[in-house]
Image 1 (cartoon, one colour):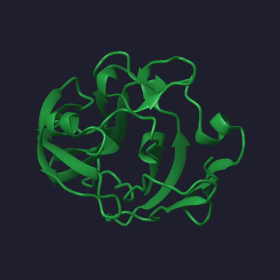
Image 2 (cartoon, one colour):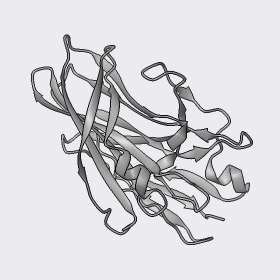
Image 3 (tube, helix red, strand yellow):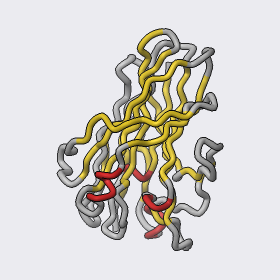
Image 4 (tube, helix red, strand yellow):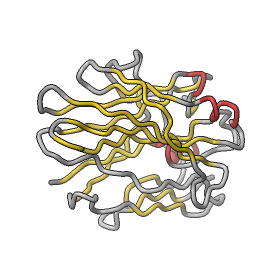
Length: 221
């Protein structure tokens, strides 16, 4: 089976102008038995520029796609290898679905801790994470590679992406814009005013390189 990974651009690079503790994240789901899943939210927190806010981010609200919301408590927070000022913090809850099916899981963190500025709007964009879980099969979601948050100026930035997941499924990738979610646990849509990194500078490329399975930005300005 092929799984599709959507790379939220918030995970890619941290810019000095960003005044938030939120750099990106992902949602993970792991089957434990039957229709019961261990669901985790992972947030990458900037502890250099947002230590107080990072410390206060002790829980998140998980929207589980079946009209259920759970408060997931933080279970771990540690340094990211190669990025000592970035802490991956994990939040976890357990949920049992009533029937098998496909469910869209989301996490929204509001504007006071947004992760990117929408071009021309002068406001902070909320960070919305999303994944799709198919409970008709006893496997879980794909795991994103460890992100890199810094790059040299005008140097090629690249991030190798895994081609298979722990379940043995092949992985395909697509770059998407940051998501808008007007209401917590409501429907999501791409933020049309968001610009890809190369569109801001109007030069270079920002793409997935196939078949190498590599995210490439050539080159940050």
